[in-house]
Image (tube, rainbow over all chains, first blue to last red; front, side, top):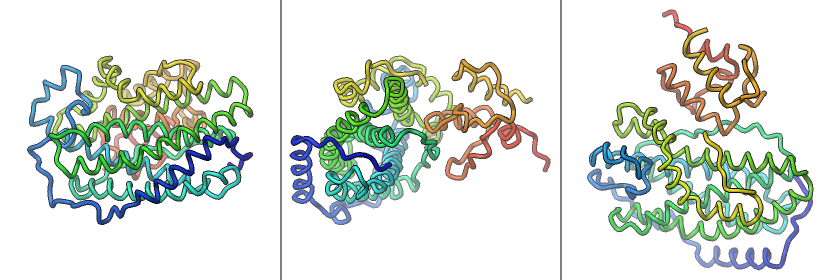
Length: 296
Length: 80
């Protein structure tokens, strides 16, 4: 994991200073920030309809209003559960790198990042436990990593960035959706505010790590990295189609629904909209040579 | 070999066209036939073909490491 120093630019340093200052100025106590009602109204949607996985297909209407309401509850608990596990895993990786050779310059911001992410993990977990009485289990298998250190460092932060941008698409929409209750809007709004800093930092860091990686590995390895990252994009999108969620929503054949939605091209168009920003970034920086994503 | 195991094997072969067969004792993880990104799809497939719910928090990776192990864990009739 230890590698040569990052090719720091003035721009990177300026962004780091600005974001660190903002983290200090905007600091809030999450344990006092939220008012958690005892229960949320089960007769309202818990997630914006256009964010539900069957949206845009005939299956959406076929499920009926009552099932969609139940689905919105369990898909929102799944979304926050994915956040819990995603943050848990990214914290492990950032903690492994803070104060290690190669990460001297961003280490100060890493302290803010770790603190803020820990707090996000807490409020997402709190939501799941209070209103869903569970956190859906992680779907990750402990990884099989035999990439070179430069590649591994790049992939860790590229995965974090993609995950944050995907989540932010959902946060932005739910924070603005006036049909959702205040608690749901507040959780999404606060996460979006903090994540805008993390995404700005992530884009700068991933660009630098990509530059450093390109100097150390050949074109064949770069193609493997691109293929892996594209599979990660599809893996992340597919984690939203959770058969355990469909079962909890009372859908009779959960795996059949997942398979039908994964095979429906109308869903691919909707997914493209949710990943428009990170995909454009990966293309602009040359991390992706095209925008073709693999099938499952 | 059970029908269920045949389906599992077919699923893996479809994703790895360079292989036309998979030995029962081949380590699927070490040989990268299942990796961290395909793991969840694989578990959902096992749930579907075995008809059993799988708890990912307690699933031992060794129980899906080879076709033999998968057969033993998910498909062989258990004597009660």
